Length: 369
Image (cartoon, rainbow, N blue to C red; front, side, top):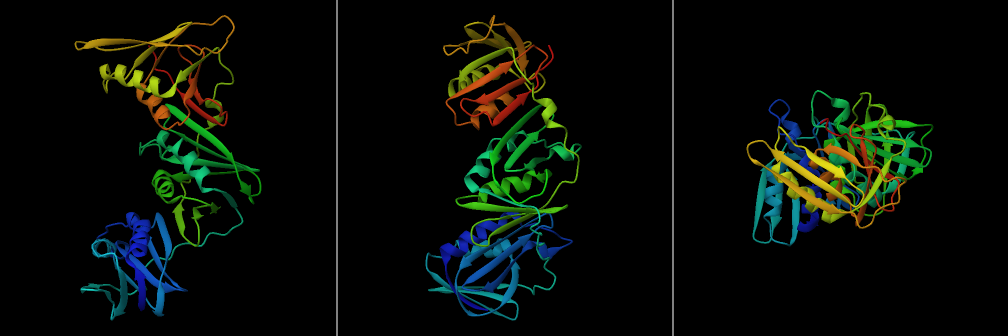
């Protein structure tokens, strides 16, 4: 292999793939980065057998070749270089980086034992704007469960039906659901669960343009601009019926200022604890009274004026208890200046929505008094 490329391009490529690396004593090859020449580019691949990533960077290819090298050492070496053109070549499974005033020689290995990334058939494929998918992930992924005993909830559910993509995430106490339009080539309704680690990685690499999503029974791929591709296994578990969790109507709707209400809750949450993470909501005609206490420590009470009340027959009063973190998670991931809180009774789930976006729904279960 003989290649010339810019340091900034090499760093960009390494940054795209190196956080997937698995440090493994049983499979040391998974600690390596596969680098091979392609047409006017360098092709980089990493995998941990659950998630894989490949990307291409521009390069002047003088001589073809391929090698696997320790990913973290290559990353440290390249990032330490001055911002100049660098020359790469290989000799007997040694990866050599030459630059203006020196060189790195790093021992590598052949590519024979490096796992290939799966090629996903395109029978189930859809496309969506990267900015739309990134926004949908931001508004749902925070609600995923990290409980190993509930693997079905440890990912985000993708529902594809006609020209609609719906993302749903839940931990059993709250649920986020959002939808957007897509270009769909799938037949019938499809439901797949994508692991949260894959979702987090995907969110990092999404940028501009469209992303092509293809999936089979066990795997999914996200084709980004050019030929960059993220591949992941799916979670083959039964996701709960999310539609049953959404209340069909409500008795009381209040409009809240997003940032102000976040600050209100943050203050009141000071006097909650892990054992008692509960804030009472007394929803009156013209205000909400927030209150919390820790026995033996103290109590707090704060009023929130409802200056922008939504008309509602008979204006019912509601007394309900929520875990403040669940509401604050919604608020800090929502850009809308105003949000709605829809309520029924003290034992019924509440629903939050951003002003002007009926395609995003956030459901929070109350705490029993």
